Length: 283
Ligand code: C2E
Ligand code: MG
Ligand code: MG
Ligand code: MG
Image 1 (cartoon, rainbow, N blue to C red):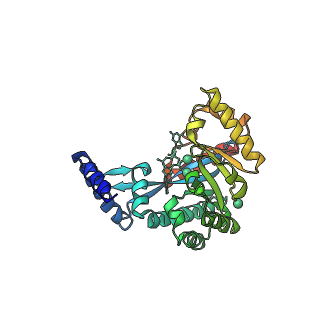
Image 2: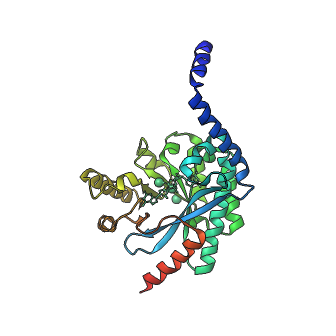
Image 3: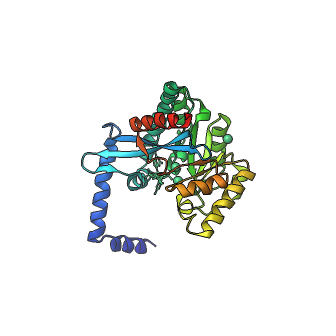
């Protein structure tokens, strides 16, 4: 066993790999300082009511502006932040900023706009997780019902008692819970019945091919119907084309999100979008 381990460790140590790990180490050291240096920024993407096109919520999407690396997208750094545990302080910052922003928009517009925040497994399993969420709500004065936590199936499917307890605790205070990237995990649908979810977000990989592939249209239709019969709302992710909005309307998909409505925007641009969209909807 020890011999085997030693051998595989040796075999892994190729020049290309050491280059990769050098890059990772550098990224990790940059990331350790990024919070202090204020390099993280939240972008906001509108989530609209499919029938009316009116704004109902925004999803907070993390961006990392690093002088050496430029704008780093989450798929490039979230996995490393998870591995190193840095996702815990970073995630805390995200939920705090997101709640403050949503409260601000409410004060500005007199309208309640929900804020959806992504939660990674490592962050969710941290013992301080629920306290951090409660602190963000208290400090911002945002109503818990306006905070929506997006959780992936990967996390739910560990089926642990702790997962169930935390979800129950969050649900009890009124926080909304959604399943992100629905359909991409090994869906054991029974969790939908036993956990207090409010919303399913259909993964964009299904949504985007709805007009090209009959199978995807059938799947999306089936997911919407199943969700509704379980009392859940549905968000279609990755809506890029107008034709798709007709399909989603016809199928009674509650909410939509995607480039057709807007890309994720820096906060100032989001506020501008919000004001323009509101005016358009009053006409
Ligand atoms: P997600 O939560 O599924 O977020 C949706 C992703 O789809 C976002 O990518 C968004 O920009 C992209 N998207 C939205 N509309 C469209 C569309 O019409 N077409 C296409 N092709 N893409 C669209 P982004 O911002 O790069 O984020 C990627 C993932 O990173 C997120 O997927 C989420 O899992 C993760 N992430 C982002 N912010 C955070 C965060 O604060 N914490 C954690 N733990 N994860 C985050
Ligand atoms: Mg999400
Ligand atoms: Mg609930
Ligand atoms: Mg998603």
